[in-house]
Length: 136
Image (cartoon, rainbow, N blue to C red):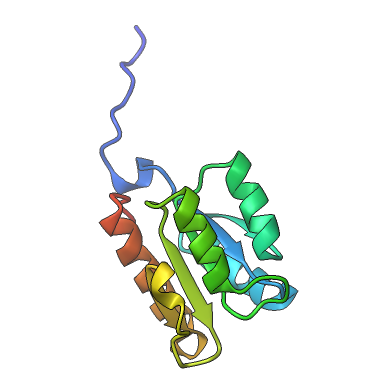
């Protein structure tokens, strides 16, 4: 006799949140991706705001984590574009600059890179929890 299909009960069976990580610099992008994957997230990356928007046109993600200072479009400009089309998609700005950009109001949260990876992961988890994604 076949066993009945299991219900998703434990957090281990829960949907892995998919994060779109955006940065024009390869090393920070790779490191951020590895840190997030180690925390159990699925991560896809983009090297520009334009590439991020192309990905969002074809794929559904749970959160966008974007660097602020990028050539060809800042993180705040990306956040504004994302919110215009997908108003409920959380966008987090991350920057080495400690001052919150004036147009950061389009993002759900601003994180300074000096806070480190543990704080970044904690804040991402909190934003996703507010969106209904459980994560341990």
